[in-house]
Amino acid sequence: MGSIRLLPDILASQVAAGEVVERPASVVKELVENSIDAGARRITVEFQRGGARLIRVTDDGCGMDRSDGLLCLERHATSKIREIADLSAITTMGFRGEALPSIASVSRFKLSTRRREDEVGTLIEVTGGKIHEVQDSGEAPGTRIEVGDLFFNVPARRKFLRGEQTEAANLLQQIEILAVAHPEIAFTCIRDDREVFRLAATEDLAVRLRDLHGESFIKKLIPLSPVENQGVRVHGWIARPGEGRSDRTLQMTFVNGRMIRSPILSLPLREACDGVLAKGLHPPAVLFFEMDPAAVDCNVHPAKREVRFRDPGVIRSVALMAARSAWGSVSQHSVALGDFSPGPGLDPLFPPITKPSWLPASVSQKEFSARELDSARIAELPVPDASGLSALSYLGQLAGRYLLFEEQEGLMLLEIRAARERILYERFLAQLGSGSLGSQRLLIPEVLEMSPADLAWIDAHSAMLEKAGLVAESFGPGGQGSRGGGGGFGKGSLKVDAVPADASSLPVMEIVVRLVDELRSLGEAPSLDKTGREALAASVARLAAAGARMPAGEEAARMLLLDLLSCDLPYATPKGRPTMSQISPGELTRRFTA
Image (cartoon, one colour):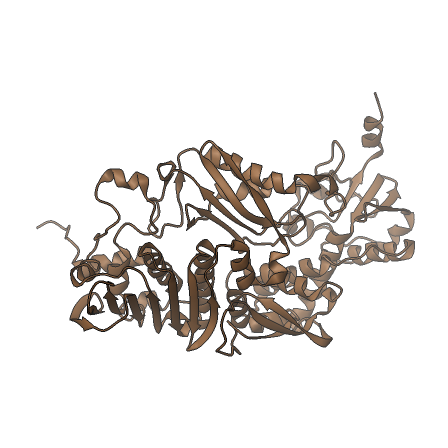
């Protein structure tokens, strides 16, 4: 007998669940998308213990009769497609017929459903993929699905779930995305028996964004005038010039109502904001792309997170046109926004640097070259002799960003923010080695509006935030201190008692948003081993350096240079951005020679 076997149906469903059901948030995504396809106008999502114990989704959609209720639990049973041609014209959120049987195979599953024209509904109970009870139900019209003890029968999958707070943050973020995609639907979310948010249906996307993220968030956005080209249309909101985040958490791009993350959609936004937004930051955006369903293939990823476009060039051009139309009127102000444009012959990332006079002759120009900047090699270099600073002549400031010095090798430019970042990074690294970073307690605690997903993330990582110097407590919808009741709300609040001392000159909201962005970009909370301390110190240093001020006068400028040269690795930021650059007399001569 051969070695190839057919998988049992339950095992096949559990394998499919591994592709479709990654964590509680993906269960919520599949169930809510089914509710949307069922024509629901009100959807309630309840969950307990980050979704691992219970997820319950209730809608007022069309419901099902008993035969459809049973059939929907069979693999590849779907009402969305009938023939191969239907795959090129998909307008629904789900279509494969894999989600419900996959979820039911790894949970204790209940389905209650009723059509409006039926006198009674149907209750179906499934445990680990096996139907063990079917009976009449007195449910209201619509559908209710309960998913209990997720992965109870697949312990290898369950152990890979993150902590309760982290899973809750991911789940809340998924609901927020679906709520933004469908503002015409009323959403209610209940976490551990406490109401997190209740969003009224609206035809105005700005109202939905304000209800979720607060008035301060919507003020940072500008509406896009709809742009259309070759059958592709885009509309929505995008950040004002200068508003950016270090990750793409608040960059939501929808294709025919489906949330999609794709470089084809995100890279044009980054390209359009060159000169308007500092490098490394991404503009928050909520963009809706509409096109012929035949122009986009949604069938390339089990969880439908990725798509394939028939003509990516058209998509890119429309995204670029839309962003540039919003930012075009301010592009000439890029220098005022802090994005200094280097002159011809200067590389903005790795300018040519001549070996300074304070380094000994044993260090070659090649070893020092910023174009071959390598932290390990540079850190072999000897600590510079600060006494050599007397040979430098201070010339002044440039563009509110650079300090200029004249030396034997020519003109030296010191970038204030990069220098400050390196200095703070090494200081913070030493502090973390013996405890936490310093905090500046606020005279009066500041209360900030935050989305439920952001509050849940902050709660999940409060210990790491306190190590970084941020002392804050959430309350209201979404936080650990949530108070239930009330209605017509979405956003919650964060009470900030203290901020990192070296960043205290920045607005508190900016400190919180940027610090959370920085730490989110690290993935899960880093441990406080050497690598974790380095990552945390670098994140807070980038935040604190954002508030760096121009030194007042020559003495302060020389002190900043001295502090930089006293660092173990003064030539670059933790991410390798040069802190100083030099232009040789020869380079200046070439620029002024006909």
